[in-house]
Image (cartoon, rainbow, N blue to C red; front, side, top):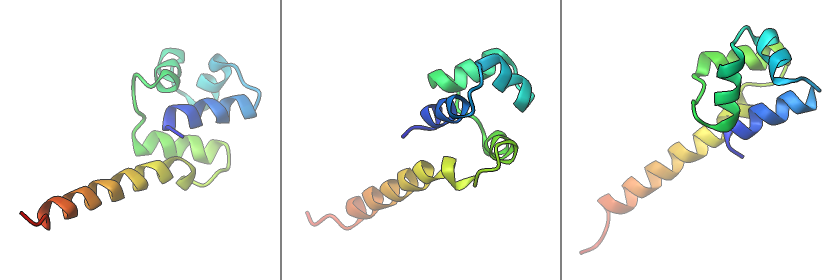
Length: 84
């Protein structure tokens, strides 16, 4: 699941409108909308803030990021050790 989907799910699970979510996080409504639509990606500080507000572990957001980093490492490994 993408970070944008996780943010939206978190908001909906807590029965918040985008405006309420924005107020709770201290972010603008347009920023929340851009995060949920995937137009912008929140930095780690924003993800940490959201995780603290909703008392969840930051790893909820970072799991995908770790998997993507691991895939990049695997691809690099495969390219480096390709037999020609």
